[in-house]
Each structure stands twice: as C-alpha cells, then as structure tokens.
Image (cartoon, rainbow, N blue to C red; front, side, top):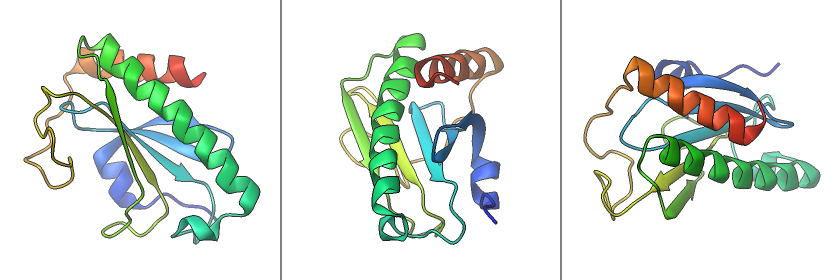
Length: 139
C-alpha cells in the first residue's frame, strides 16, 4: 500500500495527484519547488517503475516544470532555469524535485540542497503559489 513518507508531509504542502504522482509544493519560499512522489509502494529508484510508468513520470516532470515557472511568475520572480533531481539519499521513497531557478535566487548557481534554512511562505504568497501550481497542473 502506498504511503507518503512523513518527511514530505513535514516539509511540503499537498497540491493533488497526477496520473502517477502525488504532487507537493516544497515549503521553502526561496525557490518555486515541486516534489513528485510516484504512488507506488516500495519504489525507491526509477528502475522500480515499469517502463510505461517511467514515461508517465517524465511527462509529469515536464508538467511540474511548467508549474514551478508559473509559481515564479505569479510571485513576480520569473525563472529562466529548471533544476530536476531524483536523489533519495535522505528520504528513500522515490521522488523527483523540480525547481525553478534564477540568477538572483539565494543559492545561485549552487544546488539548493543544504543551502541555508528554508523560509516559510507567508499566508498570501502560499495561496498564490498553490493556485499557480494547481492551475498549471490542471488540479
């Protein structure tokens, strides 16, 4: 049975579900950031998905890219670069990070992982970010 690792619940907000993945907005206002979590029990690596599921995940990564760009635009911080990563070194459950980046962001040009301390969204900014993401994803 599929269950979301509690680490995701503590650090992100639920946006909804796509065909394969549960979608969450990372709770760090410094970066428009979505996490895709394929709803497959015991999946830790991409190879744990069937070939067709990997194709679906790639489509969802592209959708998430549009969504993080929409978040960036809605917050007045257009982002020309996307970072996509599937690490799993700390949280083993299969997940993919999709992050909109810009030269003015806090970590540029370094990776966002382990950079500084996450900044919580304000109430209004969170509502704007979630609406932009859901709109771009059709959720």
